[in-house]
Amino acid sequence: MVPIADGHTHSNPVKGLGMEKIAPKFREEGGWFVAIVGLSPWHYGLEATFEGYEKALEITVRECEKARKAGLKASCLFGFHPADVDKFMGRMQPHEVLELGLKVLELVEKGLREGKLDGIGEVGRQHYKTHPISVVIAEKIMDRAFQISKDFDAVVHLHLEQGGKVSVIDIKERIERYGTNSDRIVMHHLRGKTLRYAIEEGVRCTVPGVKGLLENVVSLPPEYIIESDHIDDPKRPGIVVYPWEMARNQKELLENGLVEEDYLYRVNVENVVKVFKVEPPT
Ligand SMILES: [Zn+2]
Image (cartoon, rainbow, N blue to C red):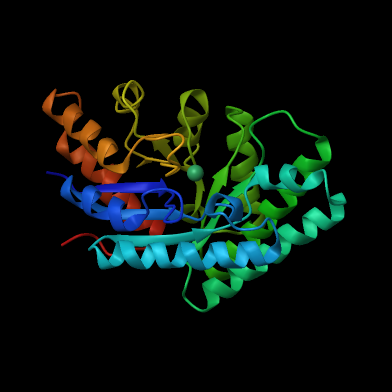
């Protein structure tokens, strides 16, 4: 069986399952790699303050250590989600929200320097209608992430609108503008037209490994990575998909002859090795 990678997931040891429970189950279904993206402080029951982000980052790092202990390769990411911008907008001045976001990225930069973190995520733009200034703030934080990525050759996971060609062109141009390694910039949770354009334009991306979507996605060139984007929230169980379920979904495609093993190897191993700079499974 092809080793399975989860290109973007979350882990909540406070309210959800946490890696202690997730990692062994994912391993059992052939999991070899996981990219763990930190959640915002309040998801872990922490305060919505800078100190909350500091603690949330530490939780994320510990979850990555747990995944490694369970035998998975792990990439550890932390950022300032575009939805967090809106969370703070009501109670803070726009420039204060921007300052907070950039301060959190400073913390991420420190984590990268110390080797605690491997990348930045999620940053990007809101996928819903919001105040124009919120988008400006989110974009300025994203741009800072591009700069840090360039400095540290760190992976960045982008949460964006599904804007088709425009979203893809925008990211491609930012990669050029900042001179970032294009293998490190990942448009996350893509589907439909945006996914097709990203592949066409050679922009790295992840796709949710859900039934009904994968069947169609495997007709595209194998130039993406599959993710569970599991939010590990007991109030919304199995959203977007459990990592082990994502693995099973791929096995099913193989059994039903909808995809070749070589194709899945490219998606789950070769692309992951390139994007996350990890050693392939032995
Ligand atoms: Zn996510």
